[in-house]
Structure formats: structure tokens, C-alpha cells
Amino acid sequence: MFAQIIETPLSGAERADAVRFVREELVPALCDEDGFSGAVGMVETGTGRTMVIAFWERETQAVTPPADRGPVFRAALAALQARATAPRSTSTWEVGIEL
Image (cartoon, rainbow, N blue to C red; front, side, top):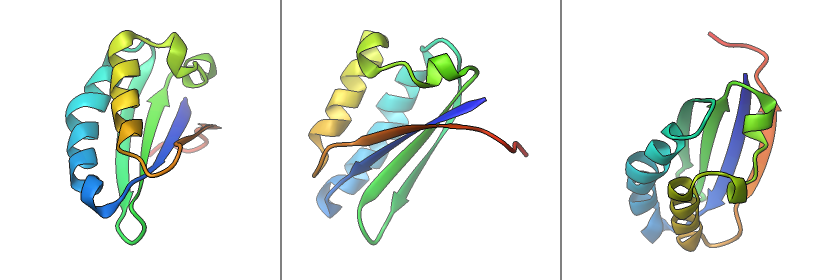
């Protein structure tokens, strides 16, 4: 299993809307992607940074660029980035422990 970590900095005003958006738009869009295995969303309240950790069955799925994903996911990710105060960062990790 692999994890794709998407970090997006948000202002305080955007934070509540972004959490709702991730829950209602981004995660459902991920569910349509091949190999998607689940996700966790977090907010660092002091800074406004948000992090979505999406879990994928294979590394090739985790490293697939947004441009190669489905249109619903691309639109949801673009809408999240429009709320951001800086560019998002993305990294991919191999999951070593599952509980």
C-alpha cells in the first residue's frame, strides 16, 4: 500500500470551507479512481495547513499526476488549490505499518 500526501496551506477564513469541501467533493472524487483505498484529512489549527493522505493499492496509482486522473478529481483538486494561500505540495510514501 502507498500513501499520497497532499498538503495545502489555507487562511483561517478558508479552513472550515476547505474541510467541508474535502469531505464532500475531493474524497468522493478519489473514490472513483482506480486503486483508491481510503483517505484521512487533517488540519493544523495553528497554521491553517491541511493534509489529505490518500491510500492506494500500488505505487503507480499513488504517483499518477493529477492531469492523468479523472475529470471529477482534477476539478475538485483545482477548486481546493483555488482556496489555498500557496501552492500545494504532494509526496508519496510506502506504507510500512497498517493497524
